[in-house]
Image (cartoon, rainbow, N blue to C red; front, side):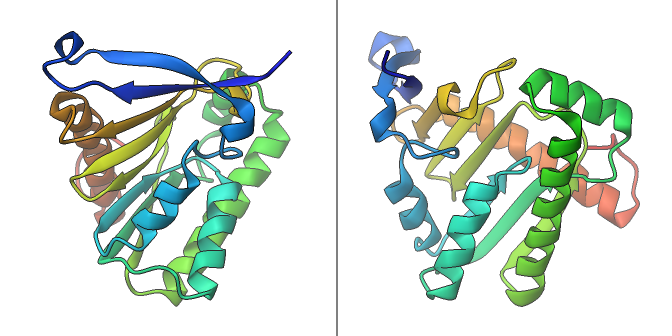
Length: 203
């Protein structure tokens, strides 16, 4: 049986009243763990824009980015990264591991490694800023400025290769784009409050 990865693409506002349509994409066209569009991810890293990346412990994305940085293929105004907080209480880790269907020990190790690698990238590149969050992770995403986003959903106990991936262009579906962008910007703002020690809900 052919494994499929579901991809959701945004429709124009005048088509199906702006609703989101889903269609299966053959697995051989998928992009490992992060996305179904590696070319778009690489182009995003060369776009010169402000890129916001929300992740939990995507080591594939990290490995790709580290390679692009080494080869000088990254040209960004700013790269903001939200990664899951490795100091999050164990009760939250346990809940996340059960939701993702990942063994608890392995998940914690992945998140700790990802955090360390992101911090190393931040130290080596002045345009990178890394913050952490500890709310329940529901998705990981890449936003290219105010232009488009690529989102992967953490549906219950779903293997990475079978998760739904959503690609939204602001020009085609501004409502859907703004929904995701505003939510992730709010998460970033709360993470900044935590870093400054200010008031606010812990992200």
